[in-house]
Length: 232
Image 1 (cartoon, one colour):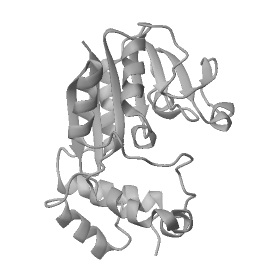
Image 2 (tube, rainbow, N blue to C red):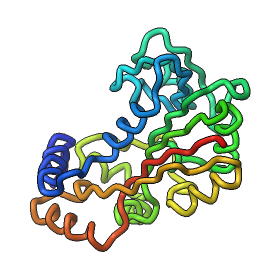
Image 3 (spheres, rainbow, N blue to C red):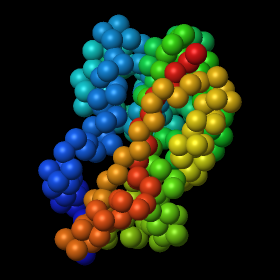
Image 4 (cartoon, rainbow, N blue to C red):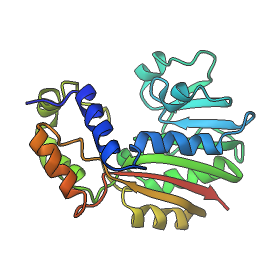
């Protein structure tokens, strides 16, 4: 019993057909970035990995990529992009120099979220935004992940047919709507958007489990959060 990415995406297509207007979290995230991008925007991809969303968007902007993983930076796919190995809690960027920060699959790994958001506010220009995509700590999928964490490295390849994705340990210290809004308020950011997004495909190892997962979306918190934090 395994769930390949192709099969998971096929279930997403089926779910979208059954629920008009629904979009997976990655598409909501990309659309939100598009709505905030301008041709001359100075963009920071925080936790850029090997290229991430800016590569997919072919964005007309001037990006900077930061990531703590040196190997990912060595394999970065957008030529000419300034890159640096750095932690989100100590950004090597001058004050008020960034128009837009994009940040996917990072909040769940942060040890000191208030410090990270404070650094984000410091480098953003007035009215600049941080757009994020992260798991919802209240969701069923995240709670199962917590319970199964000791066996994760063995289970992920067997269940999903791919290597364990998390290079860094998960903390879930900035991963609920209430927590994110509270942290943003502490450091002088306002939450202009926070969308909770269901995705019943993570547990869809069989057609029956997919149907059960769809039913559970009516009773359990959504699995993903996409939001925008703005520097006042």
